Image 1 (cartoon, helix red, strand yellow):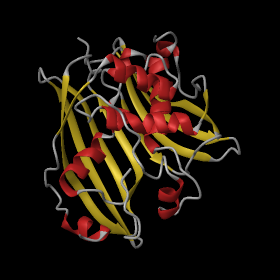
Image 2 (cartoon, chains in turn yellow, cyan; image 1 turned 180 degrees about the vertical axis):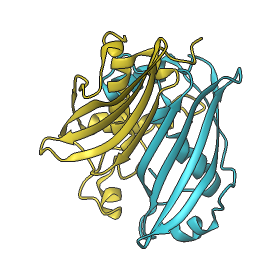
Image 3 (tube, chains in turn green, brown; image 1 turned 90 degrees about the vertical axis):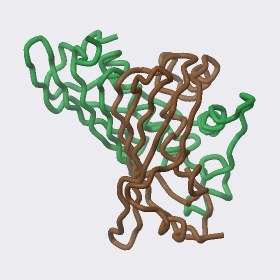
Image 4 (spheres, chains in turn purple, orange; image 1 turned 135 degrees about the vertical axis):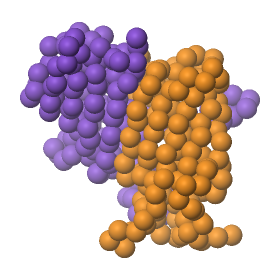
Amino acid sequence: MTLQADRLKTGDQLPPLVKTLSQAKIDQFESLSRLVRAPDGVSSLPSNMHTDAAQARRMGMTRPIASGQMSFAFLHELLARTFGDDFLWGGELTVTFIKPVGDGDTITVHGQVQERQDTGRRARFLLDVWIENSSGDKTATGQARVTVPSLLRE
Amino acid sequence: MTSSLGAYDKLEVGEQLGHLEYVVTQEQLNAFRQAVDFPEAACLSIAVKEYAEVLTRKHGRIPVVSAKHQDYYLRPPRLNKRIQVTGWVREKYQRRGRHWLVVETFAVDEDGTEIVRSRHTFLVRAPAAQESP
């Protein structure tokens, strides 16, 4: 999967991902935290600010919002698609959640190489990552570190 | 029943939080992949929200909003292996009149292989709301 990772250089942008959120997907994501806890394997939808309008209002939101972890998952995907197992073995991702996203929003997931250090046969990458909504506002920002090939797979 | 900030006030830096165990099944992985529209997604822990679960298991639901998350991946979780998650309070502080909480977790599988280390920063909300992420 690391089709181009070893060719990336400082300033290069990763191919962006575009995602459109729906309440059904948000609900499905929220149900996962219940599924792993349920001893009988039966999933249920938790009632929280991600799934319930009243709960969202109590938290100061105008509508249910996607969990920050959903945005995290999209940034994780961007890196996994680019770096493959080298990201899953030793990669690091840090994300700050800035603006909420929710049902019907289309977001674009970006990454750009900030630094590349070559040591022997390995390259260490530092990347800026971020998500923008359709208005061009950043909804999440962060950084990632990946070593290619991974140090942990040997 | 304590107020939300009462629950927050009870937390002590360094204290160990609740213990979480679960098995990664193909069914769960498929559901995760479908939810995020990524057929090769491997890290179910992102949706499990281990950091919130260990907090809730010890202190009940505290009204918080996620502000920041960090993962360091050591290896992808293996199917049908039991994952054990341990967490603790790393920091709590007040800044600009707001209360913040930092929880760290690490997850190992049943063979003792470390899977992921995480650090999550919560913004603690006003007592009116009674919800966790």
